[in-house]
Image: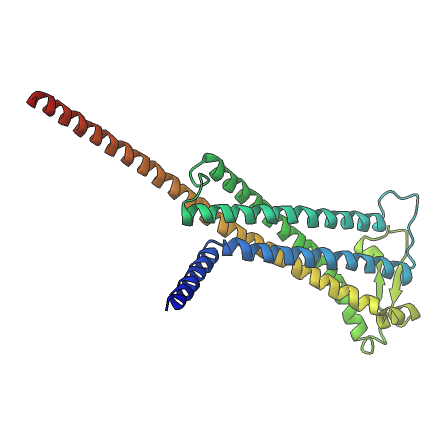
Length: 278
């Protein structure tokens, strides 16, 4: 009988512990962090490989080579974009950790009234500062999403021409890099339908893979922008809770002081009556 009671109490204790742990998790910040990491990983990984595939296409089918005399050619720009991708990956990993830690502290302060994070000006200022950063990075990811849509649009046009090569067999259509600003006006680098380079490019896996990698990078940038919106909502709610908790703490402090003053007054009067009686 005692063993059964001990087992039931142990199960009840484990259940309460699990409920406490699950209830104390900042689910909004956790979901936003997972979405942010997935979006950043998808954008950085696919974007890096898509840029490498673009270099291969330019070299193999457009016969574009790197000119040592030019300081800022298309290959240098692609290398700069790769370094930007490296920076985005590292920076947003740290930023996601900061937001998740802030969510854990705020949830613990609100639900369990643990610690002084809920009432300090530092805690509220930190939440407001992270809100500002989240809004700023949301605008950044909106711009990155729009910028990533440009190569998707260009590759979609090329991919559509390859898919409908039989329909444009009689037409003389050309892909001229001068139209995209890749090369200068005086330098002619183009591939026309019906040429051997065009058919080799369409039959290769480089074009199809690079196009779909840019699509995945676009989806990753959109996911990161949505994650920033999730963080903004979570941070705004946390800031509101922190502000209310601060007001409630001030009210409790004033109430406790008044009760202490009333208690001191009653104690003084009782002592005076006792002295007068004696």
